[in-house]
Image 1 (cartoon, rainbow, N blue to C red):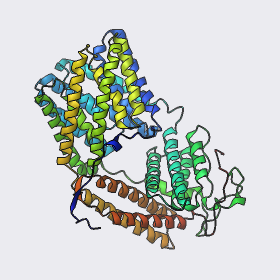
Image 2: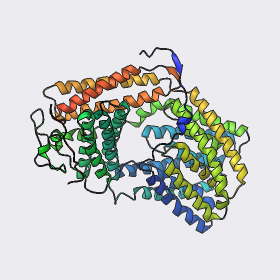
Image 3: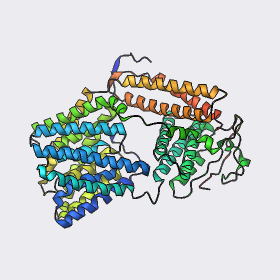
Image 4: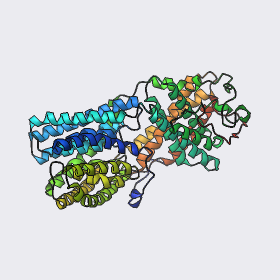
Amino acid sequence: MSSATPTRVRRLPVLGALRLGRPSELWFKPALSVVAAVAPPSLLLVVLGRLDLAAYTMAGSLCALYAHNRPYAARAKVLAWVVLGMLGGLAVALLAASLTRNAVVLVTVGALLAAVQKVMCDATRVGPPAHVILTFVSSAALFVPQTVGQVPGHLALAAAAGAWAWLVGMAPAPLRPHGPERRATAQALDAAAAYAETARGGEEDAGARSAAYAAVHAAWQTLLAAGDRPSTARRALERLVVRAEVALAAAADADPARLRAWARAVRGTGRIPRTGDPRRDGDGPRRTDSGARLDGDGPRQDGGPLGERDELVGVAAERAVAPRPLWSRLGPLAPVAVRSALGCALAGYVSLALGADRPYWALVTAASLYQANITLTWSRAVQRVVGNLVGVLLFAAVTPVAQLGPLALVLCILACNFGAEALIGRNYWLGSVCVTPLALLVTELPGYQPTGELVTDRVVDTLVGALVGFVAAVAVTGRRAGRRVERALTAVDHARERAARLAAGPAATPAALEAARRALAAAVVDLRATADAAAGEWWQRALPQERVVLAEQAAHRTLAATVRRQGLLPGPGTTSTYTHTEGASP
């Protein structure tokens, strides 16, 4: 299908945007972490009778929401940067608030900050919750009366709470040092098992296949981010991810039950399962009923020994590659920056024109909308509006309790923090039901305010922010989405040609084969993500969907051929006869 076909308008979902999903596997970690990070500073301020300062400590405490999917070595760095980013945005906001009370200037500063925060979070892939928390804190601080002399003290409070949030985020490291890597590996194994089940049924599910490749790619990214000196446990996890890749390359011959058993064992705290030689996986007499190996490594198909070092040689090569420079990732995000700055500024200006005292609510609403494409942005707008409207009703219900005293107010804030993180994984609107009363309760930290006025202002600003923000998104759409798909197709073609050439060559080294296979798998994942993002644009020329599908199919055939050339697949005529799983045997 040619990309030159006429433009067409895509339907925007409404009810589908509100459909609930399964809870996030990590829902309890950010939920408990934010409570642990917010509670001590807030309760200390209650004891000191200075709850009016809790807004500043909460800015630092909310950093505990980030990086729960990162290995601890990477988490330490990411959390430190998040704290510094939070302090930077807060410093600019407090300084602006101390120098001027001109609302138009403050909204403009808030919009520019929101654009910078959005672009930096997208470029560094920090999230969830990405830029929204940073924008909420800095935008709210713009409208808190300040003097220049107060700014250092308020920043010090936020920095102290940020340091505590860093400690909270790193606290599980001594108990489960490889917890994030284990979860990522288990998710890859489960995704591979789900795809293998569809393949065994005779009809391969393209969606399940794409999800499986994405999960495997994410697992590799997590393992590679864990550090340059892999431990014995990490090498064992890497070999399990290799098994997930093998299952994707030969899904019809894979054993889903065995993959799921490995995933269950990895999620626990016991010893990580050993995988042995994948080429012997279908040879029953070589293993016991529990899956334990009875002999050494089997031969590779090319006659060489297949050892653990061979199958992980590509991992070492990938660790040696320098990361992509940050500046090279910022260029493609220019439309995102323009969209965010324009939408947030206009939302704030309209809110001011309507007489709002807190235009930052409209600004933050607009900032929260912007996703990878117009369809997702529309869905987020629907979710935000519904969640906020229900949330103001919840605020009205809890206000009598919150106004019983400072301690009751803090406890209500903690409950809303927990509820927001526990529910937001099901659907954004469900989490917003708790985020809305949380934001309204924070405004009462300096002193109680009329409930009816707060509710009315929040409803109006939500509607203004959602409407103006979405109009800005339509005005600044991803016009180059088709070009990005073309570039992704070219990248897949080049990676496939290189992998096919190496797989067919007689002298390809294990490192070269592994590097080519990994590069092709990453290119396929990027192609699917790019095509999905482009497909959600509302008004654009039709995409080359047929070429995308054909490129994916050809790439998957080449991946299977490359894996077989490496000796990681069972030989011809060998079928998997497993009925037992390996469990967590050492």
